[in-house]
Image (cartoon, rainbow, N blue to C red; front, side, top):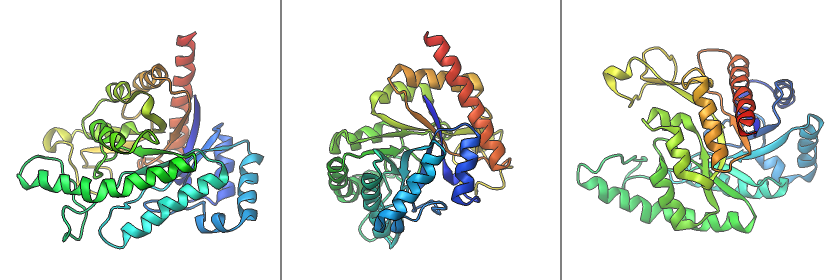
Length: 315
């Protein structure tokens, strides 16, 4: 396996300094956020789409540091009922085009979340069968919004030879294994998973069981962890408070090994090996308890140790 970084983790650095830091940490791959929920600190997608010279310069900067792109990330909400929806839809299709131009085989994104009905102004995440209208809302979402976007989008990705890695994230129509397979069965194997253990953990799931269930539909992996805090014993895991300050929350995103123990990450790496995944684990840092460089370095050290140990155990 190889270790990479979602470069939003070093979003305060300009692109050359970011890539220098990635190389200095001994990482081999990068994942770039292009817009949507990313501020796109390192990539101007319009410029790269428009100019071959910009693409050549961009690829040259990576080659100078022996870095490769693991994926392009366009996570946003293309199903939003307001202006965000069309904007993020355009971003998704533009990302397919840029991936094709750069020779990148994977894009990472989320399924999106529509309104609960045709007259609603905001997205609505349905997580219960009660009250009774919730099931009607959920079916409306899938039949009228989710599948009408995803069927043609999956066909467009297949035509360009690009695989879509959907991240199972709370407040999305695809947020767990079951909802992922509902999408995949409807649109085909061009759609796989960007497996991110952190979201599963804060929703009460268990990564090893999910990896076994997802199997070879895992196309890309995020190295990201969550820690369940003491407050969860009082309030449970649903927590609408902002991610900062971290104190007082039921759970927090943390660097690898600070939520799931190191031996737990070793088990995750072994489980990925068992289902045939031998590719990039892209560190996505959202640990707000320490500096970005400390958090990324900690995660990289944890991953490197686990990959080495898993390799020895396999011999």
